Amino acid sequence: MQSQNRHIELKNITLSYENRTILRDVNLTLNRGDFMLVTGANGGGKTSLIRVMLGLQKPTCGEVVYYDENSNLATRMRESIGYLPQKNTLDLRFPMSIKEVVESGLMGVRDALTKEERACKVAELLQSMQLDTLQNRQIGEVSGGQFQRALFARAIISQPSLLVLDEPTSYLDNGFTEHLYSILEEFSTKTTIVVVLHDTYKALDMANRVILVEDKGVKIKE
Image (tube, rainbow, N blue to C red; front, side, top):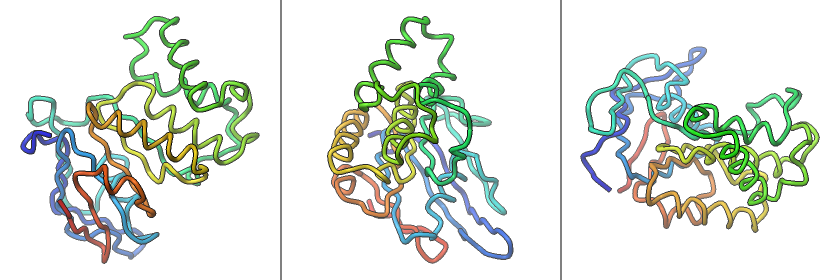
């Protein structure tokens, strides 16, 4: 890891919603090559922190600063991002197949791949996630674990430079949890990773930085 090669910087971030302060005066830097584990009690602001980090949630106060690969300031995140949100934030009634979920992870890199290359990547991940026989099922017709595996496949299929996973092991059995961690271990050599977990398990050994979200702020453990 290059400790000075900044990726995203949060400066004096405060986030309030409906007269409730979720985050207060947060200062945090994500460096390239980090494996950052974000943990803390349920409802403590972990998801809000990464949504602010990704520009999906505008903070009440403070600034989010992005940097390009040369550590120069950028107006926004321009690189490929793989993002797995919490399943309960998604509408399972939306008409979309498991295959289409995985394919959607290639939208940002479609022009860089041929049709055959895209099909090969999708087929490979469907098989790896043991979803090939379910690929034509609608997302509302599969189990929570099967849908979670599809969301994980979508997040990693483009080989993103930044991978952000919000409770990725939810709904997964022990076998697929181990499979997920083996993939993350491989990705950690070439990708900046942010993982939100309540149960830290194996990620605690893999992370080079641990962010504890509590009391509306963060504590950083290197």
